[in-house]
Amino acid sequence: MKRAFTLVELMVVVAVMGVIIGISIPSFRSFWEKAPLEQAISDVEDMCRQARSDAIINKRTMELVLNDMEESLILRSAARTVMGVDPDTGGEANLVEQGEVLDSVELTADLQIIEPVDEEFLGQLELRFYPNGTAEPVDLRVTDGNEAYILSLDPVTGKTTVVNENPR
Image 1 (cartoon, rainbow, N blue to C red):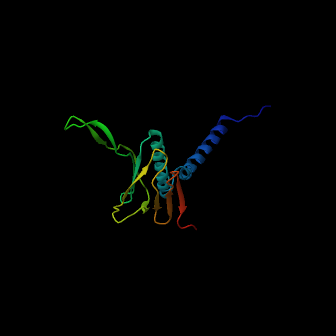
Image 2: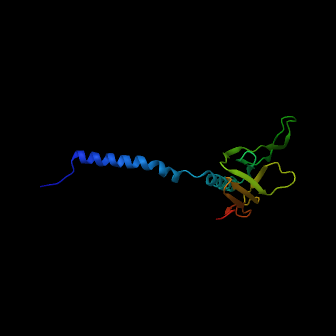
Image 3: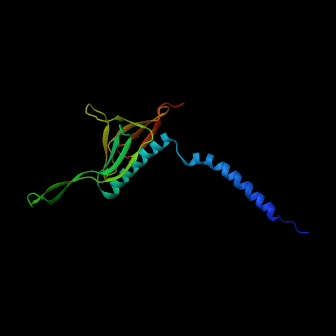
């Protein structure tokens, strides 16, 4: 005599599996979503990588505007001088072509610019990435109040280094 599962038994197994999956989905969401501090660090690193690669690929200086008052990052192409026709005189002249905003991110953690800071610093830093792959150096602190990380940008490679400021 052949033994097999009945339709009722299969339906019970499917129902039990559905309940188990339904209960476990919320706990697995934490694996997909990053904590605010991790997300902010990831956003800064991603924007630095994007700025460097855009500068190299487009052969144009890119600016990453870091604003520690508004906790935001803005990626834009740098303003440049181009030859063109002056609208006032009709003659050929050097004209300033303004940069175009390519991307922006609002951070989910507190951003503090450590270096370079001078007497005239107003909470906003325009960090330049050059077509040869280099960048201006910068040190940032990203914190959520409990933990803090220092991000350093290597001026030669344009790569970021992340260090826990208060390791446990």
